[in-house]
Length: 164
Image (cartoon, rainbow, N blue to C red; front, top):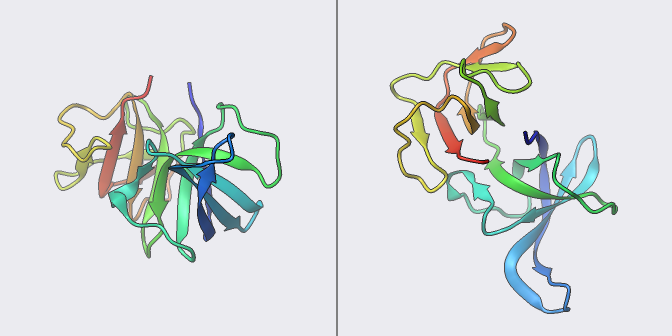
């Protein structure tokens, strides 16, 4: 099972990635992010990376990106990760990307979802998800949670990823 880790920081630079043949492929971006704990981190954003609400990213934006910690990564400095999802930070917006079990508790046992009728549940392509989101990898956007363990949150938005 994949384990997704968050990286939160401020974008310092965005540039097209160079291919191994010294040509600009133009299909992926290298996003340099300054983080409070890791310093500089490079994030690879491909055409398959999900950007929440398709928000345009630019230098100076604060973001949270999620990468698969079990995926191979080059041993270079600064660290470089291929990210699965990116959320542009805004006041009051919190996010989590994890596998949620049948009780809608994330893999780390720190967050449990209590979706409301107003919760938007969709696929990454924006189409409505009509099934039960339990048992899937979910990108959860919420604005508040309880102080219990696990914290209980009524999400504003849930994006269902059907990953193998």
